[in-house]
Image (tube, rainbow, N blue to C red):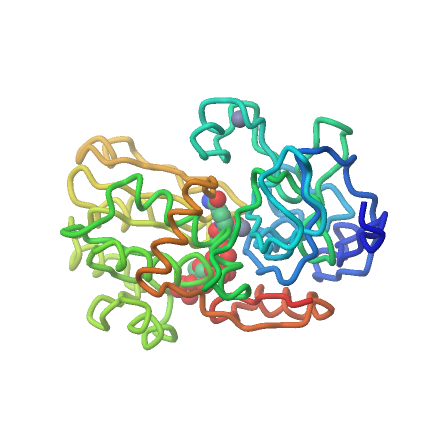
Length: 359
Ligand SMILES: NC(=O)c1ccc[n+]([C@@H]2O[C@H](COP(=O)([O-])OP(=O)(O)OC[C@H]3O[C@@H](n4cnc5c(N)ncnc54)[C@H](OP(=O)(O)O)[C@@H]3O)[C@@H](O)[C@H]2O)c1
Ligand SMILES: [Zn+2]
Ligand SMILES: [Zn+2]
């Protein structure tokens, strides 16, 4: 092992739930999982702040957070140690998304759809490694050890900080848009214009769809236009009844990226969809969704879909699309040491549209 790689990795961790609620993170060191020749050690250059980081730090989701927790799964860095079973070499610039390990053997893994791994996905943070039972720690740190298979080599022309949000936010919206036939002739509505949503607008328009934004205020209207949504397609869905009437059966695809649980499914989203349309749920609210009558779905043969991040094959495809259509995350760089302030600002809805923590 290179003598410059520390035995312990240091990052910014939420130490317990009470402090997590205030987004208090402190410098904390841990011993990374036992080295395997399938792994790479990465010296982290930068890491995006995903909405999921906030849910995890505050223990907001039904599966409890294991503390201490270093979050961050939009990681870009340089390989400093490469396992002999990997295709990487020291010096490679790579990205790691929300998945840090997989079985590498099942049909899904073989196809590069590792987030569907038959043996279960091992998260970049909070995942439990089967080899030694330790909990994975994420990218708000100086180093990380992840499976080489899940570290994707970055095309030279992609800027590290701009590429970071593609690793989770970007592929999370790209994969289901592709799966559900986003393309020319399709009307696609993006609900929630944040980290995921601002990339969904760019990606859906690059894929040739007619793009709409559904936002809760007009504050992002000018930005949305630059992201591919014409001003007349910017919908503020305050008056649910009126919006449902105006855009009745208008959409082929709605993709929800909002973490609000108060989803107007029956009153708005289902009415907005045309027959055979699809509502894709990407946002992960902390509460259950409102119940609805099946007739609402069955009546127009709608698809209600969920989608979990994306695999390496989808990330590589997204890189190509990003290159071809100049898709770039809108980022604001923050020093890694100011992770707590950036998390607080993210929670307050100030991000336009991704904070990227820089080492
Ligand atoms: N499925 C997956 O694999 C996956 C992957 C990554 C993230 N996620 C989840 O996706 C969600 C969004 O993540 P993100 O990083 O894009 O977050 P974000 O940057 O905070 O964006 C969320 C956007 O949702 C809208 N919103 C409306 N009501 C809201 C509410 N009550 N609380 C928060 N936002 C609300 C806001 O847009 P407007 O101002 O336009 O209304 C906001 O900008 C999170 O729940 C995250 O955990 C899921
Ligand atoms: Zn994420
Ligand atoms: Zn697998």
